[in-house]
Image 1 (tube, one colour):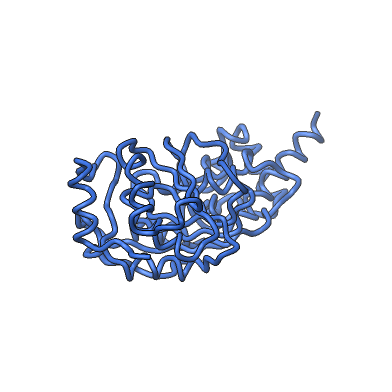
Image 2 (spheres, one colour):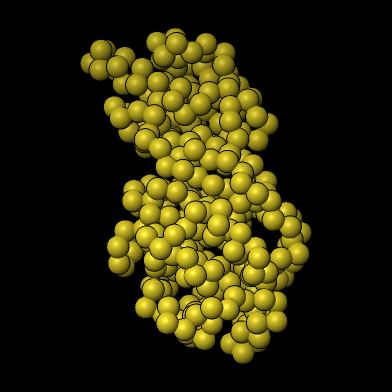
Length: 286
């Protein structure tokens, strides 16, 4: 099997009349060592069913087909989607049957063909990276792990813990589903066109939610409210969510949290405690 280098990537793009789209966040990997490194860090093997979002010209797809049992690729650009099967046939003969192709917006994909995927491996478009990660972890509960390449700033945010300057809504919501860490950095020179930023590889390993007695939707609404006014203490920040600042203070004390605490100091389990306390107080007053 051959992987794509710079010359092959440009040849494929030119033959199909494709120019990278900034609107779609398209930056194609042109270095075979980089895609092999991604697959290795993801721990992909022959028993894995991998879903890839944004395969582009197929650089990572081919590397995944070297190791994975099968790959389901989701591509939003119809021209790129049309090109991918012939690229696989040319560069990975005999592996055509291991590729399943879905043409469409990944954020609107609610089901996938074939067996349920156990791994998400993708070079994600920067403009939709966080929503894709959260939606896929929520929709496809069969996913046990993910390795995604995103802008380094986003990677650090996804893996941040409470108290970090970059800790925020994505950090807390991802933690509901998985443990996240920045596994490696990727320089701009391995992409075409060359982006202005460094990229990072984020490894996510599925874990059980921190609470089974409160809904994820309620916890996420609490997180959104807390970080919408992150400079305020939680008593004030959660006033609209509670509703009312006095009730918010009561909820926080019942959850064992100082009402002056800011959202950036709490982990996802603490936000679940807040929701649980609100539910209990609401039920008690009914």
